[in-house]
Image (cartoon, rainbow, N blue to C red):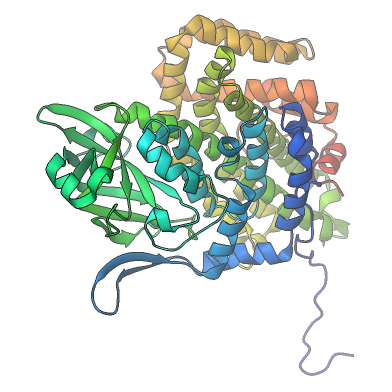
Length: 561
C-alpha cells in the first residue's frame, strides 16, 4: 500500500548497462582481432573488457567529466606555476590506460599484430571515456618522430615507453613515466599551419653550454603562441615554429619540454583552458612561448612532414575513437530497448525500432571492421602495398567514420528518448564527444584533399592496392561487384576532382567496409549492409533498411549475451 509520501512506483526502466564484459559481448571485435593478426592478445583483452564494463569504471568516467580540469596559474606566493589540476577519477583512468600500454605497446614489444591488438584495446577504452584517450594518443604517436633525434630518444623514450603513469610536475629524469602533447595551430592560421608566426632562433652555443652543459647542445629559443595546445600538463610537446638560422629555414618541428635540463620551468605560459563542447575531462589550452627552449626534430624547414608522421598515427586513433564511441552508444541504446516496453511491447521487438537499431549495428560493425583492417596496414609498413593502402584509407576513414559519428549518436540518444538526452546517463556525453574526432588532426575537407594527394602520388599502384582489397568481395555479391568496378574504373578521373573529393572518400570507405563484411561477417550483416549502403547511397537517417533484412539476427549478434 502506498503511503502519503509514495506518489508512484518506478517500473519499466532498463537497469544501467554495467557488469558487462565489453570484449566478450562484441563478436565483431573478437573476430576482427583474430582476422587481422592480433589474436594472441585475446586473453588480455577479455580481462580488460570485463574491467571496463564495471559500474565502478563507468562512474570514474562520469566523475572525470563532471569535475573537469582547472588551471592553477600561480602558487600562493604569486609565483607562476601553470599547473592543471584534475579530479582523482581522471588519474585513475590514466593509470588504467597507461598501465595497459595503450600509449606504447607496439613500440615496447613490436611483433606481428601489435598495432591491431593495440587498436582493439583502444576500441574498448573508447567505449568508456574519451578525454583520457587524447594524451595517450599523442604520446603513442610521438615515438616515431622522437626516434629521429637520438639524444632526445635516449633520454625520453624509456620514460615514454614506461607503463607507469606519473602525473607529478618534475624534470623527466625524476619521473617514472612521461606524456607528450602537441601544439600546431595558431589564431591566424588554424589548419593552414604554414601561416604560423611563432619563431625559433638557435641559442648561442656558449650560452647553451654555460646554462646546461652538454644537454644544451642544439637548443633553440622560441617566441610566439599556440591557439590550441593539447594537454598542457604533458612533460613535453612537439610544436611547429618558423626556424631562423640567419636565413629563412622555414617551418620546423621542435621538442619543447616543460622542464629544462637545469631543472627550471620552461617559459611556456598557459593563458587559459579551452571551454569545449565535449572532451571536457581533458585539458586543452592556449599558451605563449616567452623565450621557451626547444630542440629541433627532423630537418630544418621540414616541420610539416615530420609532424605528419605523428599525424598519421593520431588520425588512426580518431578512427578508432569514433568507432569505439559508436559501439558504446549502440550498446546503451540496444540495452535500453531490450529492457523497456511501450504500447504493450518491448521496444527492441517493434519492427520500426528494430530497423533503427539494426541499422546502427551495421554502422558500428562496419566501423570496427574497417578500423582493425586499417591498423593492420600500420603493422605492415614494410609491405609497400599495405603502406600505400594505409596512406589512402587513414584520411578517408577519418573523414567518413568520424563524420558518421554525430548522426549515429543522435539516433542512439533518440532510442532512449528523454533518458538519453539528460546528463544522468552517458549518451549526452558520448554525443558531445563525436565532433572532436572530425575536427582534430584535420577537418573533413583536409582529409579528403589528403586522399586525393595519396592517390595522385602513385595512381596505378593505388588502384592496384585498392583492387586487391576489394575484388575478393566482388565474387560474393553482384551489386558490390558493380559498385567496386565503377569505383576503380572512375578512379583516374577523380584524382583532380577536388569538388567531389568528399564523395570519393565516402565511396572508398564504404567499399572497403562492404568487402570486409562480405568476406567475414554473417550473411544477415553483409546482405543488409550492401542493400542499404552499396545498392543505394549511404547516408541519411538511420532506420532505412530494406524489407527482408534479418534485424533479429543482426541485433542478436550486435550485443551478445
